[in-house]
Image 1: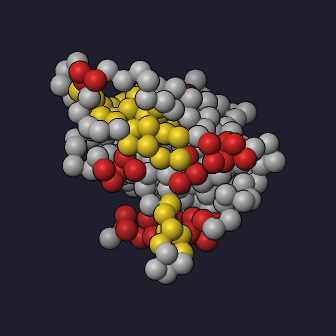
Image 2: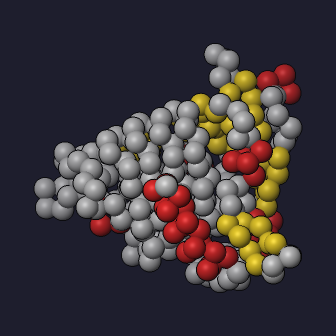
Image 3: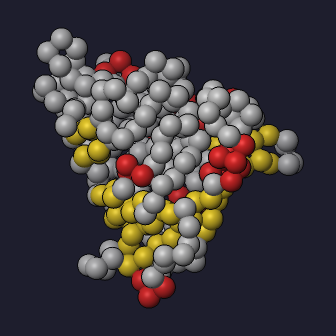
Length: 244
């Protein structure tokens, strides 16, 4: 029930922005081609040890067919997290195509093969409870991302995340971004890129991340689950994050 509350809050915020996000990105550097041109290909492959791996790519030309488990799914970057219901005339927030189509598979690893330029990463890895590794997070170009709500929510097997490449300056919402990451211990960030000055919504950002510890020893505190402690842990300022 508590997880549901988190997701509802995140959905409510994102839904309010859904109809304007494509026209008003908050970043004048975004071109029309970037808004409507990029495509994400997602597919499943067999790993060397028999594990199921989710691959995200900006093209489908380098797929080893002998390893392929699933058919390839494609999504425009700007449509990865919402759909328009004509019957009610409204947009609704959802996870990207791979969180739905591959929900019956036990995914233990994600590989990001090449540069992806999303405008939002809402619920990208939601409820991948068996996920233990994400390879290539640095290939997600976060420059134009405005919404990262629920991005890692429910990834209860992850123990660390290297987000040092994430440029957060344009992120407006990160509600539930790490919620219920119950085994997550360390989040690495870059102090210059981890700029939350434009963030307006951070409800339940760290809810349930009970094992999270900052680089100076600050441990998870249920009184601080929004962006208050979303900073590198120091003697002067407690936080949940770490620098490399």
